[in-house]
Length: 239
Image 1 (cartoon, rainbow, N blue to C red):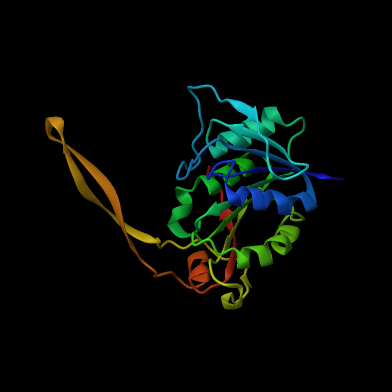
Image 2 (image 1 turned 135 degrees about the vertical axis):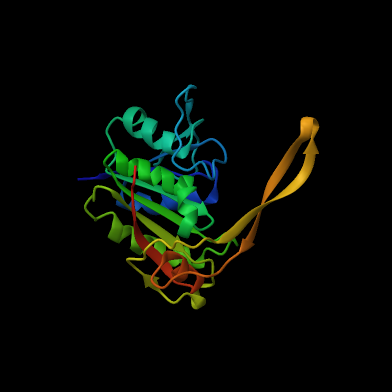
């Protein structure tokens, strides 16, 4: 039976990552892309309740893919896509390939992971894919197809999604794949807030100011990425 695959992201339907993901996914089933019309990073698992959600057919640059842009969040894309736009519900939800890692404490803010969590909540096998922000895709391109081939055959496990992160290193620097990574409780950045402007009526405008903090625990997703491994882990859906 042909698998139905719904793909979304939080970088927008025109992003390079979602195009590469859809191209790879075509080998494994019938692909629908339903993704935000613009950037939605850090939207987490939020959904739209008090406004309409606009969906339009989109001229997507991967042959054979049915694509739609959506005015909502990535989680909205999964909901409206699987419950209304698609004629039949998907077997698999894939989210990504995100521009930037989604490991450690960052996953609680990630709309890439949020979309996968929504897919799981709806009862679909769901996978989030992310990579580094330096534009080096060699490791992703080497391992993406094989990892996808393995994960699409997994049974849906209620309460969990797969979270895959590719290190942003040259292929010769990648040490391989580490599975069963747990989510680090550390953070990429230790955040504080700096004052950037005084506002009328004694208001103050602040801007987040993060300091890179490479201190992961053993066996974690964050540790794998910092050590130039591909990280595959299960993330529990606490919704």
